[in-house]
Image 1: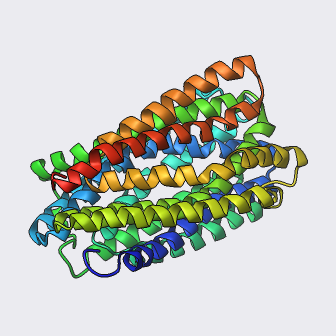
Image 2: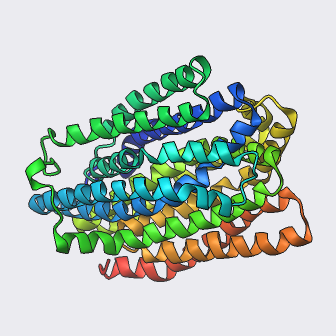
Image 3: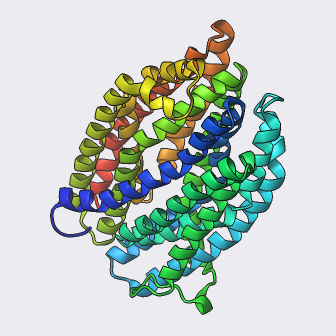
Length: 442
């Protein structure tokens, strides 16, 4: 990442990430496709609560590992390979501990959170069963993300793709077998997911124990270095807090959608599954920019950081808006993957056509946040996104839904808050971050 064409480096790094994220999204969508078409809209509504609750539980822990990736990337860029090894072992050990914590917490807290979200009584039993089984795989989920974070920090985006190919195939086959042929119902869909998660985590971990490089894991060295952990948490904790509070905001949004009934839950949930594909170029370029910035700052390439930020943002914004136009046009056809019921498709289409033409704002926000995280400035994206994507969004929905009790009001919360955060990011980037880069104080 520290030499050669910036555009080429970013794209070549992002392509395997894109393929991997595509597979991961398909991996997540399979449950909804199988459940929606085999078990019906009530079961689909139960699975459709997945996104916000899973992100609430997993987002905090995975956000913590952002700090691990930034520290590894900077040390790798500076060619301090012994320090890379220490950061890797510290991060993986911490992941094992937090994965176990997530498993226990998620299993026992699921019923409480689902009731807090206002999940309808006819959906609650299926939702509870799905999530209790899902969170039994918490360790696999966290370990996969931690191991992939290590690969990406050193510029390797290919190996995570290989493991996702295997796990996606396993999840798809087991979903069909468990739900359609063996009749295990919604619990079968959750079981297929956690089996696939453990497979991908196991493959990634084993590879790290065999890789030839400073990020190789030695079982005898799996321990946490206190100073390194503090540095990783100093960077990662704001992102973890951001993820959690935004997830709480999304849970509030979901609870407001739940109030409109199972049809609204299924329709909106189907749209969010579709929207996940839109996030792919955004997420991939954000991850590429974070790695690019951390490595180049470690190597002292400050001008290269500024150029990379511009190029990555242009690529991501252009791709996101092109996809947005397609979603706006093809939404009714795309949503039929999840349900054949006209009322469910109508709700999902309404949400798609409210949000899709504003995807360029979402891409812009994530790119600038990725640049700042790569520089270790994680408190800025945290503050911006918490204030706009959580507090402002919740305030808007709470007030306006009471005045205009229609589900469309909730959908407009997203483009409105994306606009606000984009303005704030531009002001900070132009007024403060560019000055820090010029003085080499990042």
